[in-house]
Image (spheres, rainbow, N blue to C red):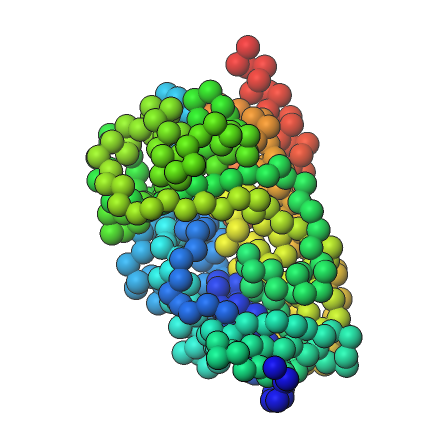
Length: 415
């Protein structure tokens, strides 16, 4: 079908998820004309349900904090880790970075709709059920081809495009920007349950990350919500699923059955929702920006769900991109590489170091070590709270060296 309509806008954001809603609201608050094009209709399901404290900084910056606080989401004040009989917890109120002490655990369908609605209330136009099917960035101004649900199409010219399409990765696909991830292929199997948790010591105000008792590269998340339900999932490399049932519910339950500490926590659960799966989710791109566009959040890169960094990276990228783009739209000369891509990547690479250390076992050795100094605990807690860009923290400024040094100490003391 031929394109019969042409529309011109200042900023077009692809995707109404957290990064898109935050970026659009920030730009609108600066007086810019912003349109969001979203393929799906909200509310819609998504994982990434345990927010980090740093997220609250961007929600507040976008003028959405009061609405989020009033929504009744589960308070989160830290992260707990369990492996066999080992248990340790980190408090986000006691961090090196002195960031926000609490955040939330959210059902993303409700949370994402709330943020999008808040952006709309601030004047951002959102068009649901519309799909970007082509893009031309070689023109003086980038041009999008958008298809509506009735199969009609229109052209959309913009001064600038922000791709916040998440796993849809619209511009990376259309512009051949996708690059292989260096992470092994892993799969997550997950569901929501009526948890009925009454296990002694269980803290609903924290995400619980449980390590498989014998296979340390297998781990589970347990994310309690405020309505008595809980998100539960297992993450493992592809080979660990080879001899498991094809039935996703049985797959998940079989891993939990092998993990007594988690089995006790979920002993009374009502398994009332069919399990889902996502695999091969780690992604990368050749560049985070180009002529007339920039990539936000998961549209650019997704590491791994282990430390719930995805939404934090998405919101951080939205805030940084909005600030640079505002200056550009004001007529200033900006450098997207040095002002956006490089500083964003430094924090992502910090998360990457600890994700790699988790699966290698070195970061687990640190997490589960019983005698860390209080100051080191605060430094690690800062990273777990999302402050991976705070280079005053030695475990951020030199993550590889510091982690190697600390894991060596922990291993020596364990001998």
